[in-house]
Image 1 (tube, rainbow, N blue to C red):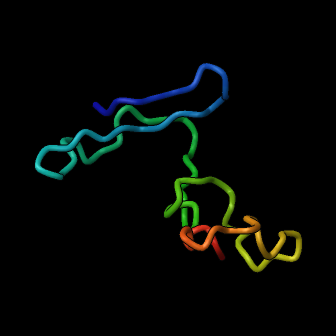
Image 2: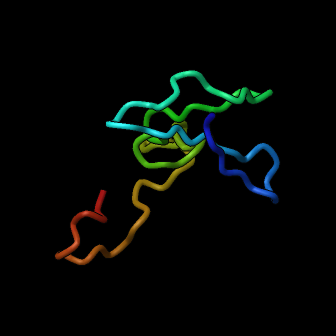
Image 3: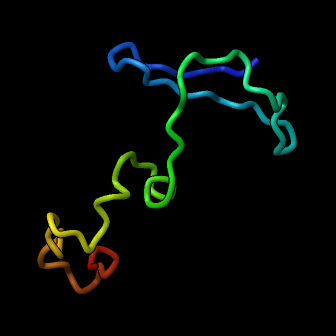
Length: 80
């Protein structure tokens, strides 16, 4: 069977952990079953490990065009 992590504080905050052998799941089937659906991250959330940010990617009417001001020249990775 699969193993899980969960949070005692946040309701329904759990995650299934699939065990692998040679980069393949030991068990393909999701066992035990969970009585609610998981949200599967997509787009920005899947890449960045976030949740619910896809609708707020720049450009966005309610977001500033620049989040980090005065970026040092040697750290262009912070610039947008």
